[in-house]
Length: 205
Image (tube, rainbow, N blue to C red; front, side, top):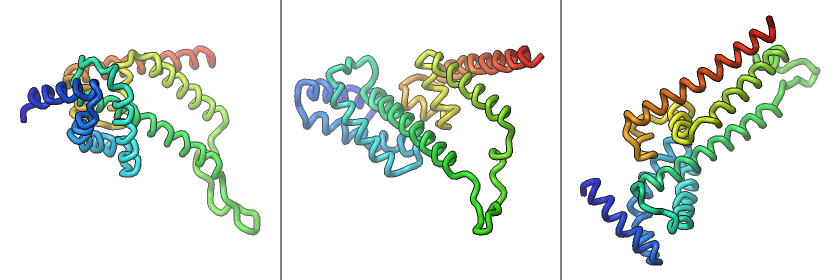
């Protein structure tokens, strides 16, 4: 079946589902579930997370189905929901991991000596840690200020490591458009980093 035929079938199923036909929505789930699962599995690298995100994605799609206007294909719309859910899961995972690492600290033997040399991070100067934290906040702030389309492709490509083809699958946009937005996003972040170091140099001079 051609892409246009698939999109037309989806449009008909969406119209029926919006009118209250549950079986039509079940058909949409059946048609797109494997691709959504594959996308979230590539992003999270966890079968359990991918299965849960896939379920949450279609639940969210059902809850917001009446808001779907058909400006984009249903497949692109539901993939975008899945990608956003996966990104939120990954961010949560990183926060939890960072908190666990913070709590670990160095280990000691029964005699009170260090069981092993602490990781390099423990021996770094407080000044270096503060600088890293401030740079991280500068980058995060610059990322948050990016237009949504730029921020999305930056997170998917440079943070999550998806290919251009995978990002096109998520967003429904062409690869040249994605590359253009990514280039502009990177320029904006580079400028933010340059400003940060220029300010540090001025402060230290």
